[in-house]
Image 1 (cartoon, rainbow, N blue to C red):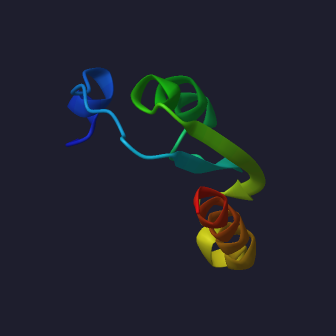
Image 2: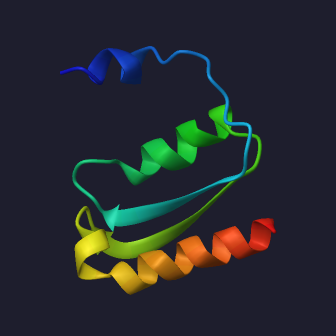
Amino acid sequence: ANFIPRLTGPRQRYAQCPVKAVILKYDTFVSPEYITEAMPKWVEKFEYVELNANHWAILSEPEKIATHIREFIKAQA
């Protein structure tokens, strides 16, 4: 209930650093469309990768998630 007002009327806060989202194609809690459509409005440098996984991918596919994070960090150096 706490996040609904922020979803419908977010404050204008922009990320000052590059952002990469790991989008989980079968996540029933976080809509992939919301991330790909809304995030570029708040981030100057935004990229994403999509995985065929659900909300719990951090538990079911931790190595894939870690690899994407590692690659993103290396690319920023």
